[in-house]
Length: 123
Length: 106
Image (spheres, rainbow over the protein chains, first blue to last red):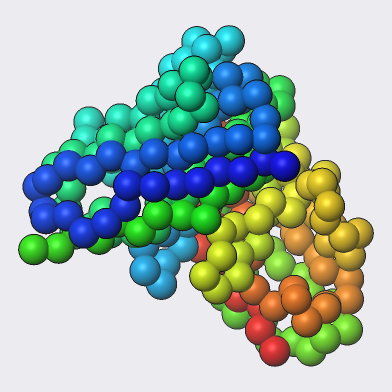
């Protein structure tokens, strides 16, 4: 069974940094792309960041709203995906979900999701 | 960026009724790279449909997806009590964007 468990969320002051982790099990992590999606309180879903498997270059993409502030990475030896967030603002307050991405025709959809980690940015 | 619009915003129905949810894209979604997700309060989203019309593993056949180009539809043939939730469409043909969601309530 695919399992994704986010951790590292919490309360952080504006301008500070925070790192989220997504610990994966039940599948061969190195073979899959991974992504982060967030949901502000009472709002819809917003894609944040994406990282391909090493087989497809291990490259990453970002939403314009986080480009230059967030960094996605992966450690295939421990099956963990990370989201390093810096220069946080109150607009980054959200539940952050990690998800496994399935490749099809060179594109990816998100088939399995973690339970989410709440990040609250407030002074 | 491809912008997705979902209608209606809220759909009020009863168990046993048919639900038809619409998702319209601001430009053509290449090769039908369109997915649908269900989200219940306090839960993570769940993949229902990918490739516009392919059901994900374990999804009941009362859920079906259709459409191409800029117009897509999610149909729930007969609503079960557990189907009352928010439904999001997402395109993955050009980066990733989600629609604002349709709430299906009683």
